[in-house]
Length: 457
Ligand SMILES: Cc1ncc(COP(=O)(O)O)c(C=O)c1O
Image 1 (cartoon, rainbow, N blue to C red):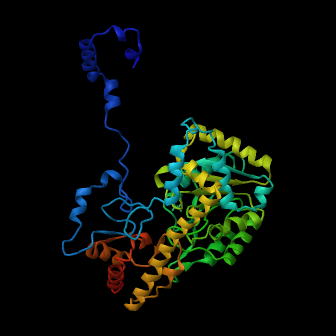
Image 2 (image 1 turned 180 degrees about the vertical axis):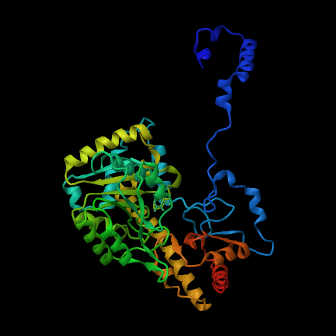
């Protein structure tokens, strides 16, 4: 490095450079740099094969010639890439028509350029995102105590929020503040908070396996027992992976304990609109907490409800007790963002902001979101009725009671193994399926296969 930067560098001939390179190979310092790394290779995650594990050609081997269907991906445990994304009834990714329209609009707009965005992001994106999370008539918005941080997807919003909390939540060192995450949860939650420096990550009761529903008593007990000022990560709607949300009455009970015990709600809203088809219904819990006077964070993702998975569009909505407080939070967020991604990308944020801020486009988007939600709801109803018609052992109401893209089928690991090995239906070891893998063409096959699996004990 020194050599290449020195004035000598330009004076050396190519052959002299080659000689230097040869010499460098025998120097210990070069050995050190080139030495195989001492850190371990990260173990593969069977539920999430990474891109280099993915081999298109290998996939063919998994197709049994006897089976007319190709491998059927309901989420994971497959040799193919796992992506928790929406699929049409033809098993294809869907670019929302409204997104296509807005992309065209952006391409034709000569006034737009590729200058850097402000550190905290596109202002009209941040404000419109917070508005859809909190509602047009939100008291917090009216009182100017809401701020937004444009982030790289919902994951970025969670991470930047976690980084802030570790530094500034309650005093300046919060590494030991307990972070409560539902059991089970989206598997990245734990890792995001650990990587942000938190050391005390705890699980709170959520899933009642026996009743295939919410363990409200366990959850309320955990809230009562948590040290005051603990942070709770709450799924705003369409809980991933169980698809089981508290009802409004249950949310009220949760909020009551959290308020009394000074527990901080960190909402993760990755599926607004996608869960029920209704943006307001899916935001009910967040808005209720705001109405109860909570200060909170809400990590929003536009990956699912806009189908903008690879554009990385997210927003961290911050609700504070007053505008001065929010300004303080945002000033620290600026520092964090500057050293993390410096400033965010514009394309996805423009698409979302233009859509949310143009009434006709907003209506069209709502229709598009409803189309996705309704397809999932239809598949839920169809699967349940087929399983019942086949007299599949067990009860299957949970398939329609659960909401969003995912369903916890309740199938045990042995039954999952059967589906993978014998039926070439790929799903997570936990029995979680992505409902979008189901189509009108394969649903009979899937129902019949689940029927067979459920008969294995
Ligand atoms: C509960 C939950 N939170 C956050 C995310 C991350 O969203 P994004 O892809 O926008 O980072 C997901 C994505 O699957 C999720 O299911």
